Length: 376
Image (cartoon, rainbow, N blue to C red; front, side):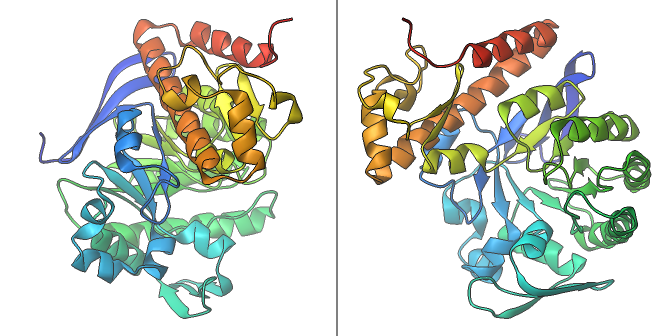
């Protein structure tokens, strides 16, 4: 196992890359989907299950963990890997997005952000240096810079101000992170839906010589076409020998189209959140188990799946669990959804290696379009 952080591209298909991130705690096969473990848990899942589905890395959330149970406590208890029983790579976000979207009475200036917890109203300060300190206490392998994210649509002057502030914060985060051979700090490209701002952000961050780069501030309300346009403006400005991470994205279709534009890593709460609300992702598209049409349907979600949740339980039973608000329903549907997402990533990686991503993507999309209705 390597003692340093590295990335290599193993194959390409157009702009799509099949790669590998290596670090002391393991390798990440890219393109990769990272299940979200907001508070040190991938909701309703055992970590062993998450690993068995093919996950090489999970995401933890700095904002939530600093509030509860507290970063210093996690450090005293052996770090997030030991605390959560996940010995493999962990990426932590900076907490910036949650501060902007969840915290109460927040105030932002050059120094950082002051805010009150959405849990109990307690006051906190988050500077770029403190964000990196918290992520270090958690012990994550990939740490994100603190940035300011602007919801879209937004005023161009506000988007530009936030982008420039994020660049200055990136420099401070890099200095605070220092030299950690087995770990990485990623910068975050901002710029909203303005191509010139995205290009400016990507170019300036590239000059910092970081170990990886994320694209932030997308999937925040803009149409998919806008997101893809921003990726087309951004990815060519980022170093080809570093991993590219699209934050908070997304749907299976978002992932397919973003991989084709050069993205290597993804995270999203969608598969776990959908599972808790009765929605299943399958190769036939989305299945809403709340719908009454499933009440007498003996079919599984996917008879060809190797995931027991997808293969061994009838839709009628899953419908009953969801409508009865039984915890097992959320568990099984989350299991199914994460299995589907990881199977999708495996298919994408294989397609890039074979030089057949466009053809494979078309077949996947056709499967979604055919839908889920039983044969007549």
